[in-house]
Image 1: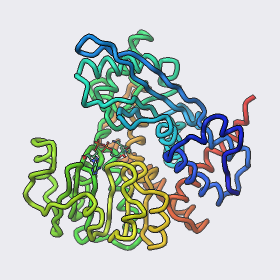
Image 2 (image 1 turned 90 degrees about the vertical axis):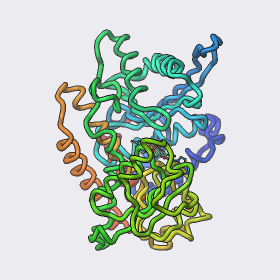
Image 3 (image 1 turned 135 degrees about the horizontal axis):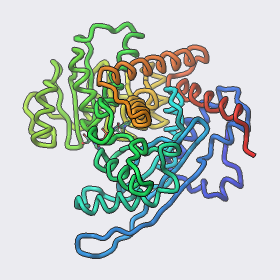
Image 4 (image 1 turned 60 degrees about the vertical axis):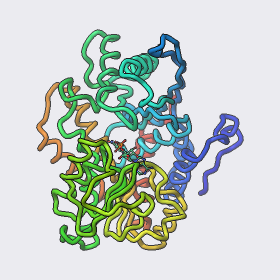
Length: 430
Ligand code: NAD
């Protein structure tokens, strides 16, 4: 069954939706077309449950008030409270936030977390704010979100442009309102106020765990012979590179926004991380040939890990990739057109909702620790992370084999089926 928007949906404004949400719906349609779902369930899950837009003031250093716009979208509350990051960027749109919220519903469901999907964003260049302005913006945005957020309804986390400090301010704003320290209202907090051990490394580490599962299944088990290229050297890319290096893989290419480095004998990742700590850019590091970001993506390698941003693998470069495996560390790094080329070429692609789920899994551990006021050590966090990711990988492969579909479609089908089943069990209110 092909699902398209009807007239009343268009009147709600979805005909204006630019590509991000349309892409999310295309992926959704591809999955549900292979399934035997109740058509009411299919229709229900196409829609975000709530969308919240706020316009709020921030006093700039020059004394003037500037107005900012922020969003928070709850895609689904079928499986539990909403979970999803908050992004500060000049590209934030309601459409993008809506798409990312839907992706979070499927990601949480796929890895078996008791959450629905959410996402938030503020249209701002965070680098253009002073520390005081950033605190003021974050606290005011958080207070605008008070009708939505709580440990049992909506639990924000960091995303692009936000980090532990913003989560601390949101936790404090909420806590001052309710009158007690409510640790479990956000995840990705600093450890000294209830953050989890291992949260920083979690997404990158999870990327390498799923890479290991994928390699095992194609019989590639000799790590020192396996070459890896990673685009993006931020939180996800740098931790993925370090963990791959620790496990003996040959990381032959890395990049950041300023460009890339290539060494077919393997790059010295600890030295690169130290360089990054000191210079905040890969540029200038000696120990590899410089390449552009587009050259990096087509370097010969066994595994390509896009870990920077969306829309990097497109119909223009997909036929030039020289890799056996793609592990989507970033959200949405591959366009729909590129997906088809990659599938036709027989390249295995591990989709974002599985490959980068390590972050939300350890966020879940942080939430559980906050609710119980009982904290785990890093070994326990990593052991449970691996257990959940391997279980989720196995479930995805089982769906792929049963229905003869690619891993992205299989991951979506697995996730959508669980939410659909839960919806039918709960029923359509009223
Ligand atoms: P980050 O801001 O820490 O790092 C981004 C990296 O990409 C930086 O090295 C930056 O220089 C580089 N970059 C930016 N634009 C680029 C470009 N045009 N070409 C090449 N490199 C570019 O962000 P992050 O937290 O590492 O997130 C990266 C991706 O992973 C995003 O898509 C994010 O949504 C996704 N993700 C992150 C987490 C997490 O826990 N941080 C979890 C799940 C998914």
